[in-house]
Image (cartoon, rainbow, N blue to C red):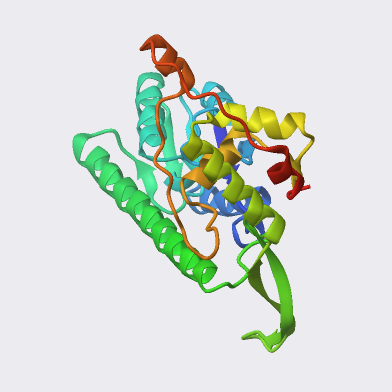
Length: 272
Protein backbone atom coordinates (compact mmCIF):
# COMPACT_ATOMS: atom_id res chain seq x y z
CA UNK A 1 0.00 0.00 0.00
CA UNK A 2 1.36 3.40 -1.01
CA UNK A 3 1.27 6.08 1.68
CA UNK A 4 2.04 9.75 1.03
CA UNK A 5 2.61 12.41 3.66
CA UNK A 6 1.68 15.98 2.75
CA UNK A 7 2.96 18.98 4.72
CA UNK A 8 2.48 22.68 4.14
CA UNK A 9 3.95 25.86 5.64
CA UNK A 10 2.16 29.18 5.20
CA UNK A 11 4.05 32.32 4.12
CA UNK A 12 3.68 33.96 7.54
CA UNK A 13 6.17 35.96 9.63
CA UNK A 14 5.54 33.76 12.70
CA UNK A 15 6.76 30.51 11.18
CA UNK A 16 8.54 29.59 14.41
CA UNK A 17 5.19 29.21 16.22
CA UNK A 18 3.68 26.89 13.58
CA UNK A 19 4.60 23.20 13.14
CA UNK A 20 7.57 22.70 10.83
CA UNK A 21 7.44 20.03 8.08
CA UNK A 22 9.66 17.79 10.22
CA UNK A 23 7.28 18.13 13.19
CA UNK A 24 4.25 17.45 10.98
CA UNK A 25 5.97 14.39 9.51
CA UNK A 26 6.90 13.07 12.96
CA UNK A 27 3.34 13.37 14.30
CA UNK A 28 1.97 11.62 11.21
CA UNK A 29 4.50 8.78 11.65
CA UNK A 30 3.43 8.26 15.29
CA UNK A 31 -0.22 8.28 14.20
CA UNK A 32 0.38 5.62 11.55
CA UNK A 33 2.29 3.45 14.05
CA UNK A 34 -0.60 3.68 16.52
CA UNK A 35 -3.01 2.64 13.76
CA UNK A 36 -0.86 -0.36 12.80
CA UNK A 37 0.27 0.90 9.38
CA UNK A 38 3.90 -0.29 8.90
CA UNK A 39 4.56 1.60 5.66
CA UNK A 40 6.82 4.66 5.88
CA UNK A 41 5.12 7.43 3.87
CA UNK A 42 6.77 9.31 1.03
CA UNK A 43 7.24 12.98 1.90
CA UNK A 44 5.66 15.78 -0.15
CA UNK A 45 5.89 19.34 1.16
CA UNK A 46 4.86 22.80 -0.05
CA UNK A 47 6.82 25.63 1.57
CA UNK A 48 5.45 29.17 1.60
CA UNK A 49 1.99 28.29 0.23
CA UNK A 50 -1.22 29.67 1.76
CA UNK A 51 -4.27 27.50 2.35
CA UNK A 52 -6.32 29.16 -0.42
CA UNK A 53 -3.54 28.85 -3.02
CA UNK A 54 -4.34 26.01 -5.43
CA UNK A 55 -0.93 26.20 -7.11
CA UNK A 56 0.73 23.51 -4.97
CA UNK A 57 2.83 21.04 -6.95
CA UNK A 58 3.65 18.84 -3.94
CA UNK A 59 -0.04 18.22 -3.14
CA UNK A 60 -0.87 17.08 -6.66
CA UNK A 61 2.31 14.96 -6.77
CA UNK A 62 1.29 13.30 -3.49
CA UNK A 63 -2.15 12.45 -4.91
CA UNK A 64 -0.57 10.90 -8.00
CA UNK A 65 1.85 8.88 -5.86
CA UNK A 66 -0.69 7.36 -3.45
CA UNK A 67 -3.42 6.27 -5.87
CA UNK A 68 -5.39 3.53 -4.14
CA UNK A 69 -3.44 4.07 -0.92
CA UNK A 70 -3.43 6.63 1.91
CA UNK A 71 -2.82 10.37 1.91
CA UNK A 72 -1.99 11.57 5.43
CA UNK A 73 -1.63 15.13 6.74
CA UNK A 74 -1.56 16.80 10.13
CA UNK A 75 -5.01 18.40 9.65
CA UNK A 76 -7.44 19.43 6.96
CA UNK A 77 -6.12 22.98 7.31
CA UNK A 78 -2.74 21.74 6.01
CA UNK A 79 -4.46 20.43 2.86
CA UNK A 80 -6.17 23.77 2.26
CA UNK A 81 -9.40 25.68 2.55
CA UNK A 82 -12.88 24.27 1.86
CA UNK A 83 -12.47 24.41 -1.93
CA UNK A 84 -9.09 22.65 -1.87
CA UNK A 85 -10.26 19.96 0.57
CA UNK A 86 -13.37 19.12 -1.43
CA UNK A 87 -11.34 19.07 -4.65
CA UNK A 88 -8.96 16.57 -3.07
CA UNK A 89 -11.88 14.48 -1.75
CA UNK A 90 -13.43 14.25 -5.23
CA UNK A 91 -10.09 13.21 -6.74
CA UNK A 92 -9.43 10.58 -4.06
CA UNK A 93 -12.94 9.18 -4.43
CA UNK A 94 -12.30 8.44 -8.10
CA UNK A 95 -8.91 6.84 -7.39
CA UNK A 96 -10.11 5.01 -4.23
CA UNK A 97 -7.54 6.80 -2.08
CA UNK A 98 -8.14 7.27 1.64
CA UNK A 99 -7.54 10.71 3.19
CA UNK A 100 -6.44 10.59 6.86
CA UNK A 101 -5.52 13.46 9.17
CA UNK A 102 -4.07 13.30 12.67
CA UNK A 103 -6.49 15.94 13.99
CA UNK A 104 -9.75 14.82 12.33
CA UNK A 105 -9.14 11.13 11.56
CA UNK A 106 -10.36 9.27 8.48
CA UNK A 107 -12.23 11.47 6.01
CA UNK A 108 -15.32 10.07 4.30
CA UNK A 109 -17.00 11.16 1.06
CA UNK A 110 -20.63 10.89 2.14
CA UNK A 111 -22.98 13.89 2.32
CA UNK A 112 -22.87 14.28 6.11
CA UNK A 113 -19.06 14.32 6.24
CA UNK A 114 -18.93 16.82 3.38
CA UNK A 115 -21.39 19.11 5.19
CA UNK A 116 -19.34 18.99 8.40
CA UNK A 117 -16.14 19.86 6.51
CA UNK A 118 -17.86 22.81 4.80
CA UNK A 119 -19.21 24.09 8.15
CA UNK A 120 -15.82 23.69 9.83
CA UNK A 121 -14.04 25.45 6.95
CA UNK A 122 -16.59 28.29 6.95
CA UNK A 123 -16.18 28.86 10.70
CA UNK A 124 -12.37 28.87 10.35
CA UNK A 125 -12.52 31.37 7.50
CA UNK A 126 -14.93 33.58 9.45
CA UNK A 127 -12.61 33.60 12.47
CA UNK A 128 -9.60 34.56 10.36
CA UNK A 129 -11.50 37.40 8.68
CA UNK A 130 -12.74 38.73 12.03
CA UNK A 131 -9.20 38.65 13.43
CA UNK A 132 -7.98 40.51 10.34
CA UNK A 133 -10.70 43.18 10.64
CA UNK A 134 -10.08 43.72 14.38
CA UNK A 135 -6.32 43.94 13.82
CA UNK A 136 -6.84 46.48 11.02
CA UNK A 137 -9.03 48.64 13.27
CA UNK A 138 -6.53 48.51 16.14
CA UNK A 139 -3.65 49.41 13.82
CA UNK A 140 -5.62 52.34 12.39
CA UNK A 141 -6.36 53.62 15.91
CA UNK A 142 -2.69 53.36 16.89
CA UNK A 143 -1.72 55.18 13.70
CA UNK A 144 -4.26 57.91 14.47
CA UNK A 145 -2.74 58.34 17.96
CA UNK A 146 0.71 58.75 16.41
CA UNK A 147 2.23 55.45 17.55
CA UNK A 148 4.76 53.62 15.44
CA UNK A 149 3.16 50.53 13.90
CA UNK A 150 5.57 49.75 11.07
CA UNK A 151 9.18 50.16 10.10
CA UNK A 152 8.46 53.06 7.73
CA UNK A 153 6.29 56.09 8.41
CA UNK A 154 3.41 56.81 6.00
CA UNK A 155 3.94 59.31 3.23
CA UNK A 156 3.83 62.86 4.58
CA UNK A 157 5.18 61.92 8.01
CA UNK A 158 8.35 60.75 9.74
CA UNK A 159 9.12 59.08 13.05
CA UNK A 160 10.66 61.11 15.86
CA UNK A 161 12.17 59.50 18.95
CA UNK A 162 10.64 60.83 22.18
CA UNK A 163 12.20 58.50 24.76
CA UNK A 164 12.09 54.88 25.94
CA UNK A 165 9.28 52.71 27.27
CA UNK A 166 9.20 49.38 29.13
CA UNK A 167 7.48 46.45 27.44
CA UNK A 168 5.30 43.86 29.18
CA UNK A 169 8.30 41.55 29.42
CA UNK A 170 10.38 44.21 31.15
CA UNK A 171 12.56 45.21 28.21
CA UNK A 172 13.30 48.82 27.29
CA UNK A 173 12.70 49.97 23.75
CA UNK A 174 12.69 53.28 21.91
CA UNK A 175 9.37 55.13 21.71
CA UNK A 176 8.51 57.13 18.60
CA UNK A 177 5.75 59.43 17.46
CA UNK A 178 4.70 60.53 13.99
CA UNK A 179 5.35 64.13 13.06
CA UNK A 180 4.59 65.83 9.71
CA UNK A 181 7.34 65.85 7.10
CA UNK A 182 7.30 69.43 5.69
CA UNK A 183 8.57 68.55 2.21
CA UNK A 184 6.12 65.69 1.63
CA UNK A 185 3.23 67.72 3.12
CA UNK A 186 4.05 70.53 0.69
CA UNK A 187 4.20 68.04 -2.17
CA UNK A 188 0.76 66.64 -1.31
CA UNK A 189 -0.67 70.17 -1.11
CA UNK A 190 0.71 71.07 -4.57
CA UNK A 191 -0.67 67.83 -6.08
CA UNK A 192 -4.17 68.48 -4.72
CA UNK A 193 -4.14 72.09 -5.91
CA UNK A 194 -2.96 71.08 -9.42
CA UNK A 195 -5.62 68.37 -9.69
CA UNK A 196 -8.36 70.82 -8.71
CA UNK A 197 -7.17 73.20 -11.45
CA UNK A 198 -7.68 70.50 -14.08
CA UNK A 199 -4.42 68.57 -14.42
CA UNK A 200 -4.71 64.82 -14.82
CA UNK A 201 -2.96 62.38 -12.51
CA UNK A 202 -0.51 61.27 -15.18
CA UNK A 203 0.22 64.86 -16.22
CA UNK A 204 1.14 65.63 -12.60
CA UNK A 205 3.40 62.57 -12.42
CA UNK A 206 5.02 63.43 -15.77
CA UNK A 207 5.73 67.01 -14.76
CA UNK A 208 7.30 66.08 -11.43
CA UNK A 209 9.45 63.43 -13.09
CA UNK A 210 10.56 65.83 -15.82
CA UNK A 211 11.66 68.30 -13.15
CA UNK A 212 13.59 65.56 -11.32
CA UNK A 213 11.52 65.58 -8.12
CA UNK A 214 11.90 62.38 -6.08
CA UNK A 215 10.15 61.03 -3.01
CA UNK A 216 11.56 58.63 -0.42
CA UNK A 217 11.21 55.52 -2.62
CA UNK A 218 12.11 57.02 -6.01
CA UNK A 219 10.14 59.03 -8.51
CA UNK A 220 6.50 59.95 -7.94
CA UNK A 221 4.00 57.49 -9.45
CA UNK A 222 0.27 57.48 -10.20
CA UNK A 223 -0.53 55.15 -7.30
CA UNK A 224 0.99 57.60 -4.84
CA UNK A 225 -0.94 60.52 -6.38
CA UNK A 226 -4.25 58.64 -6.17
CA UNK A 227 -3.53 57.86 -2.49
CA UNK A 228 -2.92 61.55 -1.83
CA UNK A 229 -6.14 62.55 -3.59
CA UNK A 230 -8.10 59.89 -1.68
CA UNK A 231 -7.10 61.47 1.62
CA UNK A 232 -4.62 58.78 2.67
CA UNK A 233 -2.07 61.56 3.30
CA UNK A 234 -3.53 64.15 5.73
CA UNK A 235 -2.35 67.67 4.89
CA UNK A 236 -2.13 70.10 7.78
CA UNK A 237 -3.68 67.56 10.13
CA UNK A 238 -6.86 67.30 7.99
CA UNK A 239 -7.78 64.18 6.01
CA UNK A 240 -9.35 65.82 2.96
CA UNK A 241 -10.60 63.78 0.00
CA UNK A 242 -10.48 65.29 -3.49
CA UNK A 243 -13.36 64.07 -5.72
CA UNK A 244 -11.99 62.23 -8.75
CA UNK A 245 -13.15 63.21 -12.24
CA UNK A 246 -13.07 61.32 -15.57
CA UNK A 247 -9.64 60.91 -17.14
CA UNK A 248 -8.54 63.08 -20.06
CA UNK A 249 -8.93 60.12 -22.43
CA UNK A 250 -12.55 59.71 -21.43
CA UNK A 251 -13.09 63.46 -21.81
CA UNK A 252 -11.58 63.29 -25.30
CA UNK A 253 -13.94 60.44 -26.26
CA UNK A 254 -16.83 62.66 -25.14
CA UNK A 255 -15.33 65.57 -27.15
CA UNK A 256 -14.59 67.60 -24.04
CA UNK A 257 -11.28 69.45 -24.07
CA UNK A 258 -9.47 69.37 -20.69
CA UNK A 259 -8.16 72.63 -19.29
CA UNK A 260 -4.50 73.22 -20.23
CA UNK A 261 -2.52 73.97 -17.09
CA UNK A 262 0.78 73.15 -15.42
CA UNK A 263 2.47 73.41 -12.04
CA UNK A 264 4.60 76.55 -11.70
CA UNK A 265 8.33 75.95 -11.43
CA UNK A 266 8.46 78.02 -8.24
CA UNK A 267 6.08 75.61 -6.47
CA UNK A 268 8.03 72.55 -7.60
CA UNK A 269 11.29 74.16 -6.44
CA UNK A 270 9.95 74.29 -2.89
CA UNK A 271 9.78 70.46 -2.81
CA UNK A 272 13.32 69.83 -4.02
